[in-house]
Image (cartoon, rainbow over all chains, first blue to last red):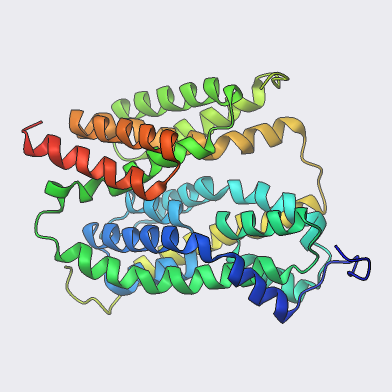
Length: 240
Length: 106
């Protein structure tokens, strides 16, 4: 960083553009995942408008995909609470992501910060973390990256929905199983080492037992909470 | 394809808005919290383990419920990801595995 660089974080339109440019390597993944959501939503019986609305206002891939497992034709207060709790649980990792960037982004004016946080995702958080480690002070990078992801994410839900629902026998090509396959693959980069082993075993075991004992999809929340609690209770590993 | 592509049921819109609100609380909550409450190491470990726990808790029961072809597809996706770290390759390999095994009658 040159010595003339600002020492306090700020937001500029140059930063927004830089953020968008730094996001280009992520776009193929966003296109595939975003259109996979559209296809899965069509399979679960959402209308096109409902699918696009989910991408536009929820804007969180894993949560949108998991929420399809609780999607239904008629809603009760209980089922709305259940899907809201599930989405919260899936997205709880964002609380930690937000906490980690707070010392950097937290000092910009609230009228920019609070609307800007709407576009926080795993991908633009990584883009911003990398930029920040190199000494970058323009929080516009976080927002510019997130805005680009949002635009692409919302657009690609449409062809995903249309093409996915045009496939005659999705089961034959495994298209009913896109979401679990993506999740299984995502376990690999999320694995942080041996400290994850026991929490993951507990999570998997509790989820499996819950899925056998109780109908519906309570097993995701039960397993996930059990895994997190296990990690909190276990002593921190120094050799991990 | 469901009827009325360009319509949305009012209940579904309420559900989506609740999901969006819960997500925004997560997005903004960490920034807000960090300015007010220190996160203990214990809390940090719990939150760090949550994404992986969710993935495992989703995939394992759904795999077992769907059958052997599904379990094989999940294993192949994990192996491809471990070898090449490419999400798209893992997805394609998993889809090929499950469709091939289903074609063979599993």
